[in-house]
Length: 212
Image 1 (cartoon, rainbow, N blue to C red):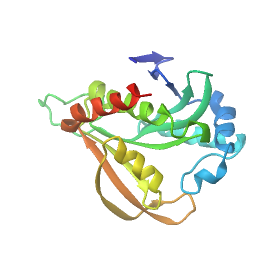
Image 2 (tube, one colour):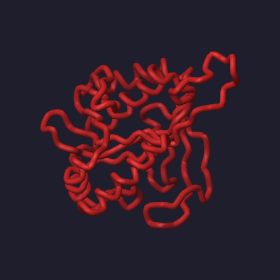
Image 3 (tube, one colour):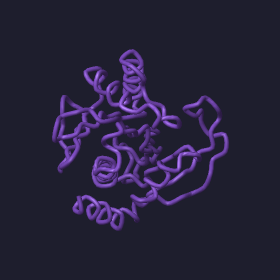
């Protein structure tokens, strides 16, 4: 499950899923994945239809161009089907002083994993666990970040439970933090994993995957 490069962008390969650099070629797959059961996404922003999928991808790619995000399409390996999307975002590069060991690094110092959603058939499978494992491993072992954050709509217990299951530490509620999928100012539940915790989180995730 080593990280690979594809067309100059990051490609993360697992046993169950592959995280491909998001592109317009994924628009039909994203639209089909979201359409399987729209009732699942009352609290999650997902594209509905190909036109929305194209706009969704355009926005993600503009963030990537600005250096603040790295978006992926999640592909199920058994049938090569697009089953959702996720991204690194709020990518932080700290202003280390000249002479510091980390001065001049291009790799991030901290980031967030978010905009993660799956089609209904991929829920309660290894897809989410492995996607998070691949991203966390890359963040902590390749980028050597200090912190990975997660935010979930405070009302979205399914997402909060999933973050807690993989080892995210609850930090509190940010009130009126972001616009929600239903277009109100949402309260966000904030979680994080920091670098000293990764050696304990990693075998936990591997254990979950081995049981699959």
